[in-house]
Amino acid sequence: MAVHEIIRMGHPTLRQVAKQVDPAWIGSHEFDALIEDMQDTLNAAGGIGLAAPQINVPLQIAIVHLPGGEGRYGEIPEVPLTVFVNPEISVLDKTAAGCWEGCLSVPGLRGYVERPQHIRVDHLDEHAHERSFEAQGFLATVIQHELDHLAGRLYVDLIEDSRLLAYEREFVQFGLGESCNPSFVIR
Ligand code: ZN
Image (tube, rainbow, N blue to C red; front, side):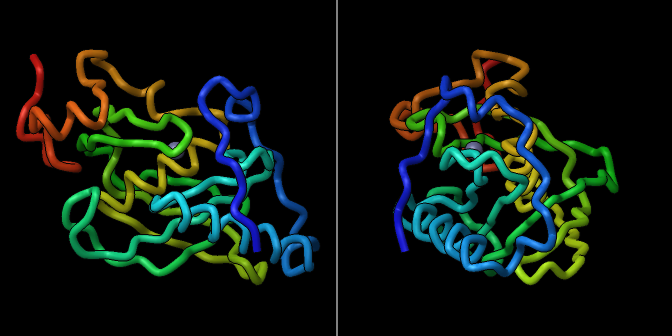
């Protein structure tokens, strides 16, 4: 068990396309230790998702864990820890909605990003079983954000209007919005 340093925007690993995981490696002691370390790191940081490149491991692995209830992102659904290995994303409905996103690799900022709100992810789980995961709404946004890390993308790349980027403190202070439901849009 170990909490790793989360690398930040500017670190070249965050801009690489992560490598596919050899399915035969899944379930090995090293693989299990990596997943455990990712969980520990996510919990220590108080986040809801983490991609392996964020701890400087450029592999196609991401985890998502939404504790549910009221928190930093407003009212969110509960999603148990889910491990995505070699994920492939399909957009089931292109209808997009915006959320104020944050990122552990871009600390202190929030930015408004629009993404499709209905997706499916085909992936391997932590036992190398093939899985298909369907997500809507906020969860669809969270998963797309995490899987973008595996493609070397950060949410800030998707902000269409740079006026919709704010420091977290000011975001709260001036009530710029709530999670996926902005009460205030600077136009
Ligand atoms: Zn992120």
